[in-house]
Length: 240
Image (cartoon, rainbow, N blue to C red; front, top):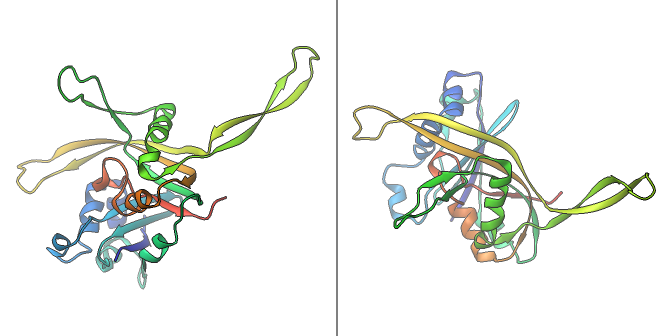
């Protein structure tokens, strides 16, 4: 059984601000939602994403076990707050090839550079153009394609000197936010903390299912790199 959970984070509390600003702290909080050792006997690992639509900061979690988020509410929530939890499998079973859904996810878009005889170095994709191309080049292996939409364009007719309307086609996806995050990380055996830098891009748009099994895998196992730091959790909604 796969579970889908969500709750709001209180930015007015010190604990809330810490979770919002530090992916490392949020990762630790999410992993603490499960009994120690319980994830060792199940397939998959928890995914999480923090959506910032000010003034709302909403945490989403997809996990192979049902999470207990009392500790996050205690340190970063409101008195009497509850979180939303629902089995995810019934929704996954409803997915069919050819369906169109609105989507959102945050990714760590990277590509490998020239190999020079070995594995090339990972290079973050920082521009909107490169980040969009990164998604379009990989979406089919994740089980979906991005359909084109028509965009009106007004242009000046060279013969008549008047405005005419034409239509352009463009993939129905936008990079709605971009950020380069830096935060401290200290491993269990590290004597001092190291600095982690991660480029994140948030995507929103419309997808069409091309491979149901691949999309279900993407929804439950995540997309791309940086999953421990809030990247890769794809969510769907009714299309616009």
